Amino acid sequence: MFNRKKIVELIGIRDIFVPELLILRKKYSRKPVTAVIWTVPIAMVFPRCDIIWIVRPTTGDNGEEDSELKCFMPYNEVMTQIDKFLVPLEGPVPNLKMLKPELTLEVDAAFKEKGEQAKGKFVGVSSDSFLDIDLEEIRKRSRK
Image 1 (cartoon, rainbow, N blue to C red):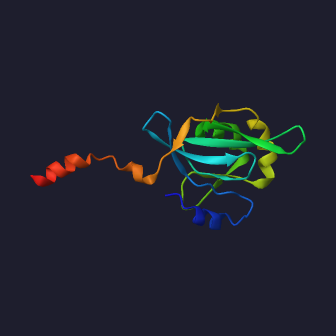
Image 2: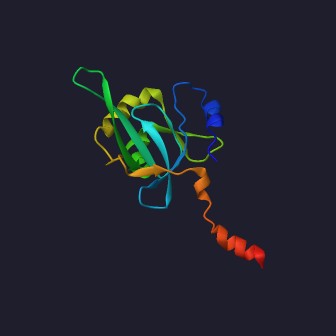
Image 3: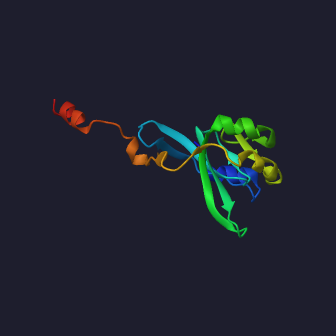
């Protein structure tokens, strides 16, 4: 289990984001995937997951933050691009990697226009939707 509080305590550095592990599914599929959201170029802990939802703030003509570009990339593809900037993090969860604050600018350039556009591709999966049991079948069995 990915325990955010323990990871934050383990790191001991305030400027590193520890994401929440999300469960999503493609819009027309029942198969769940795990994901984290990464706002590039924020320093972050990367738990093992299926996809990384990349959010990139964009600036308008006036130089101020205008909107966000969102895309999905497979975890392995992201790791291939940034692995040389990551350090392993030993702790209660295996295979954690961490992008330190001093390396964020170097990583930023790798994600200018990458990944599949996120709009409408995935939807959240609530924890109560994991029950995949035919209740009528259970009732029939209990009557016997």
